[in-house]
Amino acid sequence: MFGFPLLPEQASAIASKVDALMLFEVGVSAFFLTMIPLAILGFCIRYRRGNRVDRSNPPTHSQSMEIIWIVGPMALSLVMYVWATRLFFEQYERVPGASRIDVVGKQWMWYVQHPEGRSETNELHVPVGRPVRLNMTSQDVIHSFYLPEFRIKQDVLPGRYTELPFTPNKVGEFNLFCAEYCGTNHSIMIGKIVVMEPEDYEAWLAEKGAGPSQADEGEKLFVQHHCAGCHRGSQTVHAPRLEGVYNKPVPIQAGDEIRFEVADEAYIRDSILLPKEKVVAGYEPIMPSYKDQISEQDLLKIIAYIKSLANREISQ
Ligand code: CUA
Image 1 (cartoon, rainbow, N blue to C red):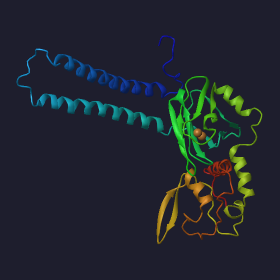
Image 2: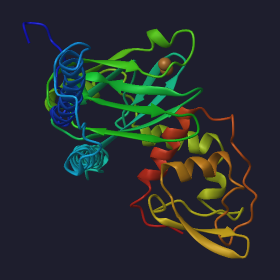
Image 3: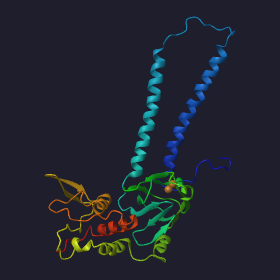
Image 4: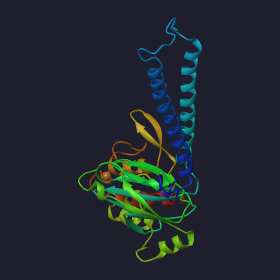
């Protein structure tokens, strides 16, 4: 408007929808913000002292007015509620085939790991038009991953994985901010999102620093941390096998009962750091804890490896 951008560019599939909702809400607010002072001003002038107007029989109540001021705002609020809720569910919907990229926030940088092996700092390269799902965690305090041109923001929490799905729809470079005050250098915890044509992205993934895939790195760590000794090969120690376990329900011994829990990223992370909390039914709680021994980046690699075992048959 007037050559001055009031809003950032719209660079994701959801951006224009978020803007539409926001403009509607601003419009409703602006309407009441204008009408109420205008009414006050009008009455002030009309009924000012000394003005000769009819002041007899002022109405004590009006049923039609009451109905209007109850039904009107309620209808408007419901429109906003339904609209925003539908948009929220649309944004967080799990699109099948979305590529998962891991993000670790720490004071004061963003670390990004692509499953194909390439990693980067304070930058995120993604292909245009393809759905992406960020799987994020923090090494220290609460951060927030904020992409204004994509109209999305998600807190990044220590000890938990949060998700941020989006589909970029414009090639270019866009802003990445940390939107949660996280210490002295919070203001420099910024970066950029580079949206590329799919072919360029494939080429970029294969460029220098590509190294082995995230899952292969994870397998190395799996052996290094002696996980392999119990969880695969000749089992001298009794431990559950991990092939095919990812995203499947796992039986957990809870007192005398057995309950089931899906082995998602969070479950696997907990099982590595707090193995005695959730012991798989039929096994002894003998696994040592790896708390404070494996970095968040390495945990994500090990999880990627266990995930890569998802479709493998159990080989005895
Ligand atoms: Cu990280 Cu602010």
